[in-house]
Image 1 (cartoon, one colour):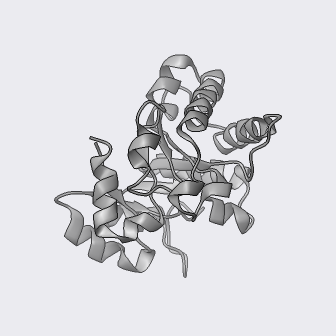
Image 2 (tube, one colour; image 1 turned 45 degrees about the vertical axis):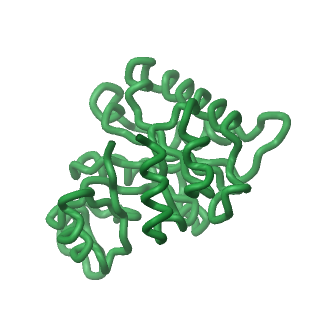
Length: 216
């Protein structure tokens, strides 16, 4: 089991020095500029010097501010070229009885992962399924374990179509969206996810520890 902490940029160095014995460092986003001197830009080479190992990409908050699938795809390639694991977030704004949300997910995955090398890049990829309608709410508003399991199967099918089954099975898929200590165990067991991308509950040390214990 791996634990990553993704603090706001001003706290990266402090968190890096204090968490080396139990966690690895992640960032909440990534500049589209690979390297070099660019005023006001924190480039991947700077992040790498601080020990960053993973970058969260395509989070719903970034997408809500206008980030496109094509921009996410570009940042995913930059992350891979920089030696970071890209954690690409996908998730539908709402669910419907006709299953149209699955088509939304298919398109988001297809275009957010465009241009990846099937054999080299895809094996280093991680996906975070974060249904937008469940983000920032309480445990009772999270997706049901049954619906989560169905969605993870669908995501793996899309990845299989894009790459191949062997590679798709190796891709780590996390869940985020109203994850708390009270529902973490139910969401984890038997749904096909490998862990969580925890939001508000990560700010409470006891709740965060209880969520981590649910993965053991």
